[in-house]
Image (cartoon, rainbow, N blue to C red; front, top):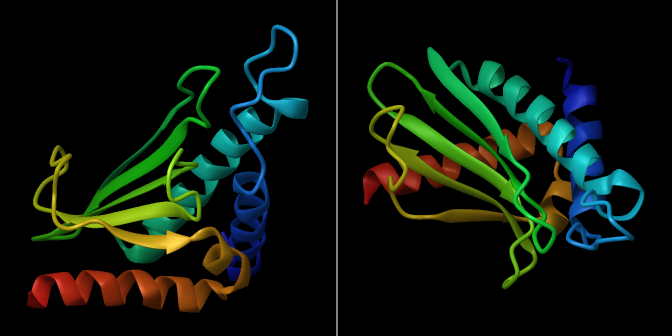
Amino acid sequence: MSVQSQEKNMRKLAGLLGRDLSDIWGEREDGPNGDKKVFLNTGKTFLRALARDLGFMEYKVSANPGGIAVSGDCSLIGMWADSGLYVQLSQPCYQKENVLLCRTVCHIKDYSGGRNQYITRRELESLSYKQFLDRLADGICHERAA
């Protein structure tokens, strides 16, 4: 996927995560106008391309729609030769700006990993894709040094 497509997806995700994806309208669980489903699909597409751009040797992308009271989440866990990264996109019920969580992992089934690092919705909205990748790398490098 191109850099422009990834930046477009970043902006789209930032916009979606700025809305209340947990709303229920009538009997639907997809939020207003199906925004929750769009978020989950766009999130998976974005994370798959991110995995390729980060050069993972092995990775897994998943989406969990959750229930009517939450946004659901999209996650990526990927491995290089000797280390890895976990990335999760969601709309937390507290600290609502912290929409992207990332942390180091030791193996593909390491769901606790290292220290949580966050990228805010505003950063997703304003960073270029290269800046975003650099921001991820900075968090990883700082954690490895600690």
